[in-house]
Length: 409
Image 1 (cartoon, rainbow, N blue to C red):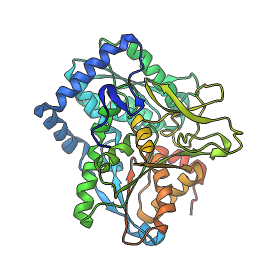
Image 2 (tube, helix red, strand yellow):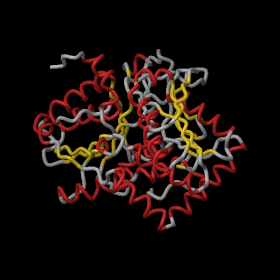
Image 3 (cartoon, rainbow, N blue to C red):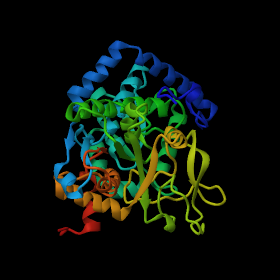
Image 4 (spheres, one colour):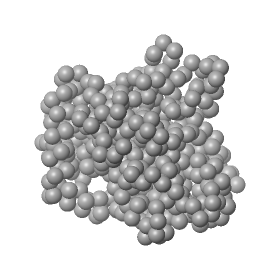
């Protein structure tokens, strides 16, 4: 196994590929060629790196969580602070990279999708910076629970188009963004936000996000003189996790763990844990099976009759019914493990990190924090965990206050 995957046409073993209408194949070929050329273009790379440094604010810090470490009584815990990137999440890394590519291809119109709103804000921000038209599709449910991010997009000059079909969340927003792209493919670039979709998106998004892992690797070597024992990151589509994992894939001594949305619990059927085994009695009828969704082959939560299952998470960014193809492949290879945290565990993660370190995590990131709380006490005190804090919790304060109450002490 090497870190050079995917193979031709974006195949990670049996996963990935291109499953799209013929009308989109020329656009994908154009995008792949543009990206391959840009990777070899020193001027493009220099401009991207310059903007990451002077606009995004990279490198983001690696913070030692001393009080949380002492409280849990086990492994040393470091936090990779993507919450401190401009716009408050890791999504800006990929949004800026793809917006530069769109400009390079002469595409002046951008369509994007968003669930938690962070990719939408990142896309709106990058388009404002580069003078591109931006339309973001967002489900009605997510608009209601992420109002601050909707306003941030609109302030940046982006049109936010509500989606009222299906579950009215991320899956349905992607559907509408793809429909728009098909209709306007000559003038429009689809700025996909995660390691999903048809090739080259899973690879391209991973590469733009891999700055997270490159920085974390250098930072932990400087801080501790060695690599970590464990990496933990939340997994919706999987971009922040693969961004952290990618630079460590060849280091077999570094365990990698992705945390999915356990929602109301696996037994309830109201979750988005694609890799969790279904309940033994099979009562929920929801099971992840190999399937095709939004142009790529991966595990997809399905009903017994093969329909896409309705998902649930307290987090607007983790309730996607499928998962990036590289994550499916890493799991098959037993190179990465995957678990889940419930809504209640994520809320507890928000509370403990806020109280112990003064850092309010996004509800997505709080799923990873919840796993740290489980794992750290059982590890030796000289072991090291890096948890990726993919975003800050400002956008989720309404939900957090509603669930925890205004008096949380």
